[in-house]
Structures are given as structure tokens and as C-alpha cells.
Length: 87
Image 1 (cartoon, rainbow, N blue to C red):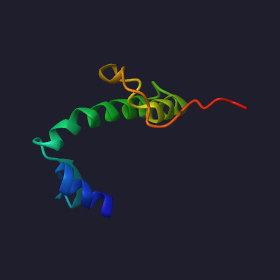
Image 2 (image 1 turned 90 degrees about the vertical axis):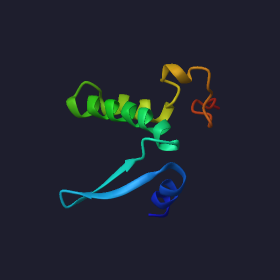
Image 3 (image 1 turned 60 degrees about the vertical axis):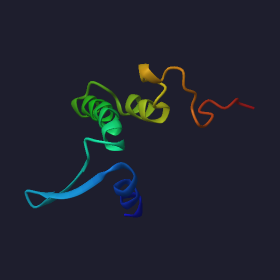
């Protein structure tokens, strides 16, 4: 919960009720506006997994190597060594 509270403070995460169910969304301004396109990309990949267009292994590969697979981030390097040398 504290992670969600931090996202509320730093990124404009909003918790609200919709049809009796709790829902989370980001404000469409500030940091939330920057996150919305990234969340769309994630949702698109998850939809591919759910529809069978992508295997679980492919989905995991996309997640673990994100943002390396995204065109706008091609010049970024991963924060961790995702392919460490084999001894």
C-alpha cells in the first residue's frame, strides 16, 4: 500500500470507486501524463498475451528487458546486467 501512496504523491495516482469496485488511474497532467503512454504499451503487450498472440515467455522477455524493446528508448542501457557472462 505504501508504494501506491508514494505513486499518489509523486505521480498523481488516483484511487476511486467505479461500479462498487476500486480502480486506479493516473491524472492526465504532470507525471501522470508521462506515465499514461507507457501504461498503454504495457496494456497492449498484456492484451497480446491474453489473446494468445504472444507466449508467456515472450511477454516476460518484454517485461524484463523493458524499455530496451521500445523504439524511443533504443539508446538506453538496462539498469542491471540482464545478460551476465557465463563462467
